[in-house]
Amino acid sequence: MKNSALKILIVDDEVHASALLQRILENMPEFDIIGTANSAKEAKTILTVSHVDVILLDIEMPSEDGFNLISYLRSKSYYPGIIIISAFEKYALKAIKNSVFDYHLKPVSKNDLLASLRKYKSMEQKSSYQSLEQISRLLQNDKKRMKLPDSEGYQIIDPAEVLFIEGDGNYSDFILKNGSTLCISKNIGSIEDDLPDNFIRVSRKHIVNVDHILRIRKKSGKTFASIESGYDINISRGYKSLVELELARFFL
Image 1 (spheres, rainbow, N blue to C red):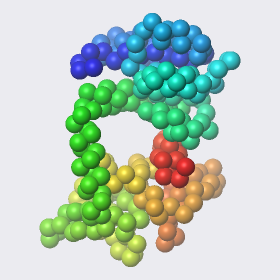
Image 2 (spheres, rainbow, N blue to C red; image 1 turned 60 degrees about the vertical axis):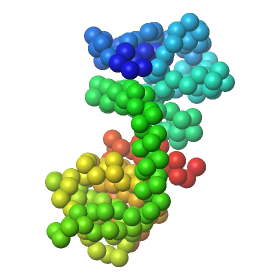
Image 3 (spheres, rainbow, N blue to C red; image 1 turned 180 degrees about the horizontal axis):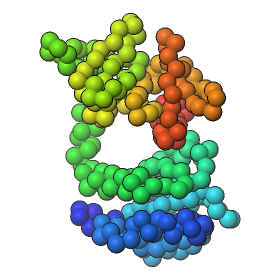
């Protein structure tokens, strides 16, 4: 793919939703909308004559839904990136089973859509590098050790001992199973990518260890992750769909 434009197909039966996606991406040379389809059938026709890198896909459509289109593509050994843009959260778990790249609720914001597309393009461009990086990370995770800076140098801890991480400005607190708290001078965003895969972001301020989630519950219109030792961590609305996708990787 290198520096060529990302070829995109929009599949949505709602005219206004499709038009919104086109407006977001128009006049951006890094993206090339090769077509729009208002049904899975029309999308198949376009795909027989055009190569696409990414499909922006709605789920609920007449005759065939978005998942039927995904199944069709897999049967043809065709694997473009699939970014679902749906009005419903309920399809998130099924989406992860179908290996979608990302999932957004309508109306998707410009920033969120561009972030997903650029992330996909970057991953495609650096696939060989990332494969090596993923192997390295897996090996690091196997060692079951985290090196965290403290006032005297570094402290080595087992990730399994971390219940969750709470961000506080330029600092992050690691809440441990033994009841202690380890504070480091890094903001929560800067440490997120260095954590093992079983740590997931649930809000702007919190990252939780999936292994210590006892249950997901709703109370007063909010969703909480109940953590060992009696902690209830609020799952922000903006992270809810992504949290469901991540949890599905571990529990399905």
